[in-house]
Amino acid sequence: MKYNILTILFIFILSSCSTDSTDNSGKVNDSSDLSSQIAQLKRENALKDSMINESLAFYNQIESNLRSIESKKNEIRIISDNPEITPEDKEWILEQIRHINFLREENAKKVTLLNKQLNKSGLRIKELENMIQDLLQNIQAKDSQITDLQAELGSLDKAYSKLFDVYQEKAELVSELTEELNTVYYSYGTEDELAKNQVIERKNGFIGIGKKIKLLDNFNEKYFAKIDLTEEKEIFVEGSNLKFITDHPSASYSLVPVGKNTKIKISDPHEFWKISRYLVVLVD
Image (cartoon, one colour):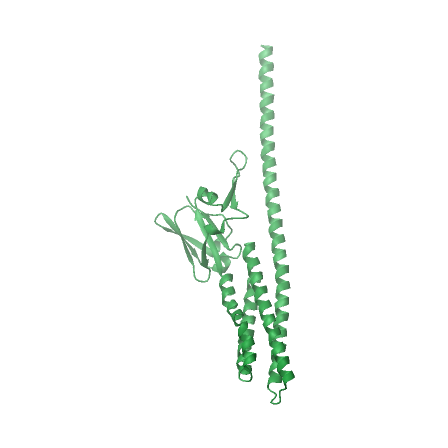
């Protein structure tokens, strides 16, 4: 009897130790998840700070170029209005036109690079997007003034007009960049479909609890559809019981059942896409 009691007591102690170990493991897992979330937030904040700093540097450089263009444009106009323009003056004007074209090309490159970085980051930073829109408007206004100047100088000397023609295609970048800025992407499917096509990654929690699904860092962009946020206000999804993997403010959209499928009605596009340019939806 004494032996049986000791055996039962020993089993009870082992069971208690096992339970404690499980509880501790759960706590460790929770702690690990929290640390991972904090680290992710820090990375996102660092990325935002980096994007803002780089964008401000680009902005200042482009604004400086625009001021130089304005100054040179005015100087050219003053000299070209002189009826007694000399060959030296003509050569000076040609040199200033070359410099203006160089500055216009630099602006186009910088705005393109800035927009690509913003797209690649996957962030929707409203202030930066507004800043890019302002730059595009300023560049467009300046290009319009340069076109007027080109027409004026062309009546004096065809060499002036030809130099401007070489870089005329740069003005077309404005509409292309505006289109890029308004481009967003979406993808939907079952968990297995999205994982198989390298859109999401799955992290299992402890004994099936705390399972996490998130967008892959290097996700497959080919599995996304491209739309214009200013034109597309509804997204049709084949499936029901939708779950958003990416972050989109709930007040900016509503879900409308369409038979066995669902329509995402976006009431405030800029608010909906401000956190992420990519929408990923899980369906049953």
